[in-house]
Image 1 (cartoon, rainbow, N blue to C red):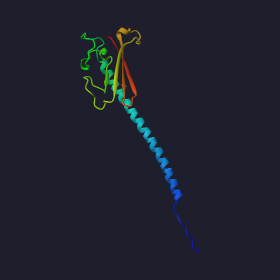
Image 2: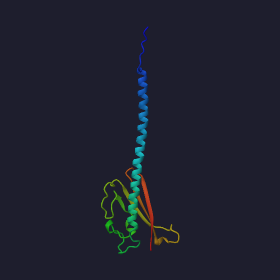
Image 3: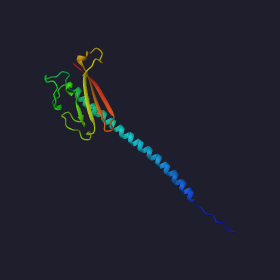
Image 4: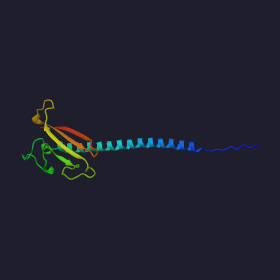
Amino acid sequence: MSTNLQRGVTLVELVIVIAVLGITAATILGSVAAVAKAGGDNLAAQRAARVGAGYLEEILARSFADPDGVVGETVRGAFDDARDYDGLNDAGARGQRGLPLAGLEAFRIAVQVRPTNQLPGIPAVHALRIDVQVTDPTGARTVVGGYLTQR
């Protein structure tokens, strides 16, 4: 008496295994794609915050009062007081002399400088609120703000 033992998988079993592997791979790749997108958005937000902080630092380094008496200089390299930056709109981040910063061309920067009475004990004529709004390439907006007071 001879017994014929056959080992292997049937076509149905093979199709089921392939389907399960396909579903697993699709789920894993979908998760990886979501994480990669979130990481890219986070990077854009971090860059926007750094750009805004750079602009704010530049503005805070300027004088509260206009030192030369010329109100509203129009060329960024000539800005000598914080109020000169009010209304500044840059398409693409720029350095202090107005030159474009490489790799930051897709960012938009808008600056608002206005008197404020939000600081206790300091009248609005002696305090400025500075807001730098940076729109990153994804369209998300980051606002970096600070105060400058007259010394």
